[in-house]
Image (cartoon, rainbow, N blue to C red; front, side, top):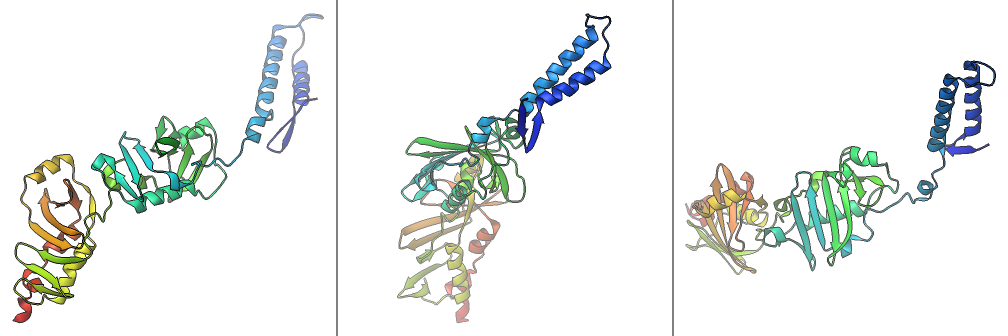
Length: 335
């Protein structure tokens, strides 16, 4: 008698078949001795099909039992990865490349990328919480949107031009979690990550601190100028600026953050627009000219170090354009 094990239960195919045969014989009578009626033949065929189904369902699947449960999303650590290619469900694509210890955006004139954001992505992919997959079937790939033809994010990791792995990110099973599967493997994991933290648009990966100036030595605007000499700041007319207004200006330059790259159509419009504020700032790294614009009620900034225009929040825009000229030049403090 063949016994099949599945999920802790022992199933006797022979016993099942014997029971089914008895029920069939009891329920159906022969038309005459030595002759089997059509209903009996039909029921026998049905019985054989049922036995086949039972055997197929409960037959021990040795391949699955022997397959390792833990299949890492990346075959190696994040340190050797020097290129990441990202695609989303809308066919947007971007590439991140590492040169030395810094990441860059080749699709955006090799502008610096946000290294902190990239490190977070790599940590999430390589450091999943559980070694146990939540599913392995083809149907689950479709349901969780981690199939090679249906996904929310496709992440390809390369080292020295060689593809290490492609990981698909799909639906979210809960707060700050996402389903993930490595291409070529069945195991589907739930990892701590947010799909929105892996955008397929290059501008979203831009280093937000790109234009920050931490240690200015002189600042020149249309209506005032400031110079630092022997640790003391003086205006162009030799007066000491208001301490609070000076600190507000210096803090705005130190913490200036861009929100991405201006759209292509706005780039053309900005190239012909007149800046509302122009700041020429000299620091230990050299001299930089910052120009601030407002187009279609949105704010932008350009730098002499780069050819593109960048999006700017209203908060950062107001901090720099709202500096009181009389206070920062020291004229108000003398009255």
